[in-house]
Image 1 (cartoon, rainbow, N blue to C red):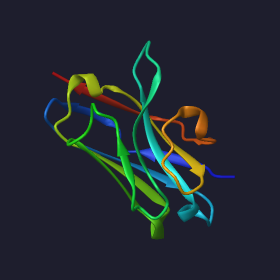
Image 2: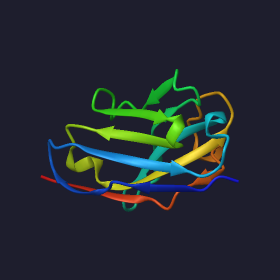
Image 3: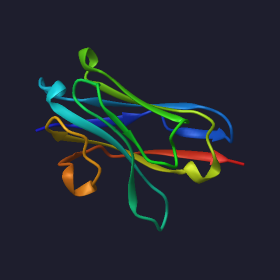
Image 4: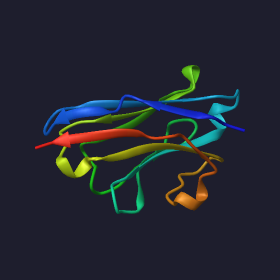
Length: 124
C-alpha cells in the first residue's frame, strides 16, 4: 500500500514557475514508477509526465515538453514536478500517481495509487 500526498499548488501568473511535490509512504519507493497527471474542469485526466524508479527514464506529454521537468529524490520518498513558463491552459488539478514496476506507464488505468490532488491556477 502506498499513500501519496501532493503539495505546492497555487495561483501564479502566466510565465511564472511552480514546483509540485509528492511524498510517498512506504519503504520501497524505488520500486515504483511515478506519474503526474492533471485534470481541467470538464476534461479527462491526462498524463503530464512520468519517471521510473531509478530516475533514468522520463516521459513528457507534448504539451509540456521543454517547460516541465519531473524528478525524484528516493532518499526522501519524493517526486517533483518543476513547471516553468506556465500558461493559462496549464490550469488544472494535478495528481501524483504510483505504480509498482520498472517501466514508464502512460495510462491512468496502469496506476494503482493516487494522491488527493493539488490545484494549479495560471492567470493571464
